Length: 321
Image (cartoon, rainbow, N blue to C red):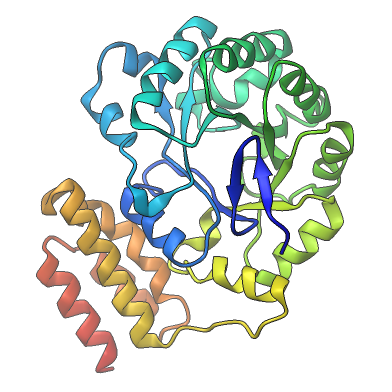
C-alpha cells in the first residue's frame, strides 16, 4: 500500500474507524488502532457544550498515544462557536479536527447541526472557513449524500468545503432521511471524488475486506471509513490491510475474540469507572457473539452486565459451551 496522507498527516492503513456516539470511545479507538486501523476519530463533541465547559465533553476529547493518528470531531451550527470549539479541542493535540455535517439523529439535525447543514451550503462554507482559520492541523468534514432525494448536493457541498480550506471529505452515501437503511449510493461518492482535488473517504456499509476493496475500486477513493461493521470485529481493519497487500486474511479464534472483548471492557472500566463502563458495555459486547451458538441468549445475558466479574463469567461460559 502506498503512503496515504491528509494534509501533513500520514497513515499506515487506508481503513479508518468512523466516529460513533456512544461507541468510539478511547478504549475502542485504541483497540481498533491496535488491530490495524489507520486512523480514528473521537465521538462527536458539541461546540455549545464546550462553551459551557461541559466536563463530559472535555472527557470525550482525551487522546492517548496508543490511538494516533486521531482526530476530534466537533458539531454545531455557529461559525464562531465552532472555531472556539476547535481551539479548545486543540489543547488535546489531535492530529486532525473533523466537522460533523452528516449525523442524522433528530437531536442533532433538529437543532440545525449535523446533516441539517447540508440544507445550508452558505453556512457550510462559513463554518469550514472559521475552523480552518484557527487550526494548525488539517480540518476534515464528514457529510452525507444530501438531506433527501430531492436535494442531493454532496458534490456542491464538497466543493464548498474544499474552497473553504478543508483537507479531506468523508462521504456517507445516504441522505439524512434515509438514515442507515437503503443501500448506499457509491456513485455519489465517486462523483464527489471526481469533483475535488482533496482526498475523499468512502463511508457506508463497508462490512468486509472484499467490500472495502470493491468500494475503493468503484469510487476511486483511496480511503474508506468503517463504523458499525467493526463492532465485535476490530479485525476487519487488519483483514482489509491483508487483502490489499495480497496476504491471507487473519481470522481470530473464539478464544481470541472473547479475550479481546474482555480487554475492551477492562479498558473502559479503567478509563470511566466500572459502573459506567459496564452499563455501556451491555450494548457493545454483543457484536462479539455473532456466529456463536446461542447468541440470542448471550445477548440477553449481556444486557445484565454490572461488574467486571460478570464479563469474566460470561467469557468462561461461552468457552465451555
